[in-house]
Image (cartoon, rainbow, N blue to C red; front, side, top):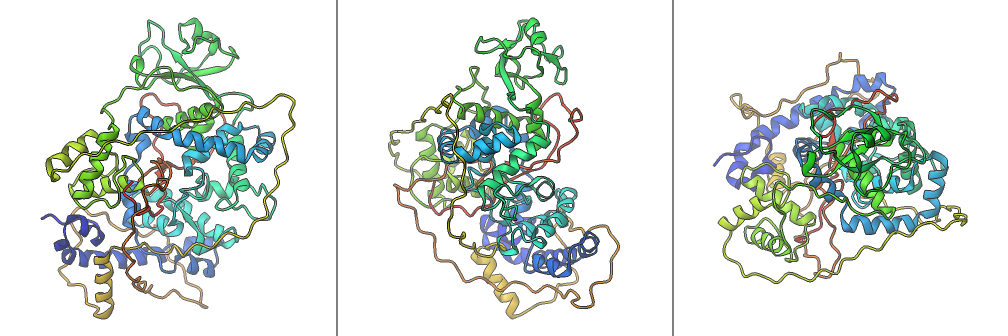
Length: 574
């Protein structure tokens, strides 16, 4: 049996026989990680971070293998654009978005009036980034950034965020126990990375804190402020779905060529719905990811502003389309091509039964693809040495059929889903003024330092604490494992008042009670690219001056950093 290369926590998916072999590399990684973390103090001190802040922020953190795994998968670059957009603009996200538009209507009107950003765009970003605040991420931000910086996976990005993250704690906007975010350190309702927070977050409710974690006015106001700084033009859209001319060729209309909408129309590129362009003088570029095989678009300046929030065409298109749907517009007229036929309800239920039979999933079979099912797929993929993305595909189902024991089919439940139409604003009606509700302070979440470990790892840690053993001289890290790297900066003298001590391992957490299944009637969280531990989201990038944003031909924007929030999934199967 081949043992995993990285950490003992993978032993459960490959067999407990690997645990002993993985123990020595795990200890070595822990030592190198703590050395690397302490090596960031000189740069933090030069940036104005106090020793007290540094010590509190890094106390008890450890290398998080889930961060490394998530960093190596970026769905907005690796998944077909149509699949990414369709998953982002789902029926439940539409219905929830319409509820949020009604609930926060006065607030959104005030934000739109102040920053000139369409309220539907703001809500769409909220929906894609954190599923309207339900999946903000529960990774400890400092631990996630240090894991990236010290392991060589997106290390340059992480090092640029660490001091900004320290200062968020030092300024009192949040504390170390509640400094939660995604695997890449993206934070709050709309997932700002620390440097973006430092430059563009706003205190919209005027309470003296820029609280994007718990204060919705601050989070949504900050998003609109960021887009305004990124060149958003008030009163204009992001783009139009179009039909290509008969003489279309990718070479003739390559990405990057700007023309007015009138010029595009003269060249035979017209709106897919047959309507004229409202402002023929607006300049646009052609985005045609699948040519004649799928939808094509003329994208305007505001699409470029969305790319500055995240430089991936898939993301910007999903935000723009979700905003249009929330405003009452219909789906795309042209269909996306699909590289792999999607699972029917019966097939989704069959997949869940196989995952349960093989021990990768607990709970009831209902055909709903939620965080539990996605986690089961990831568990199966790990066990089989496959790429770990959590997507339930026909390929996964075929492999499960060949391996799982025979099971009795269950009839698919009848769908009762419906999406209420968006309510248009009434002419002449003055919007209400948003008043911040007077509510009790939010309950403090449990400390986030550290990651819950499997039982086998807890037992290993307990035995190591009781009988420490020296690292054998001949022991070496597994071949091909990533090297931990300390930051490249000269060492500086540590403060005399409190020199850093070798960090002690955290006490083992008591074994948690076995998860209880959620009743069948409970509402299950749906698949969410930006939210669940097994979903994905995108990092805002720093705005660039107008006109300097690169427009690339080919697939989905320039390389960037995506992230996935890491909320612990519910115990239900779906």
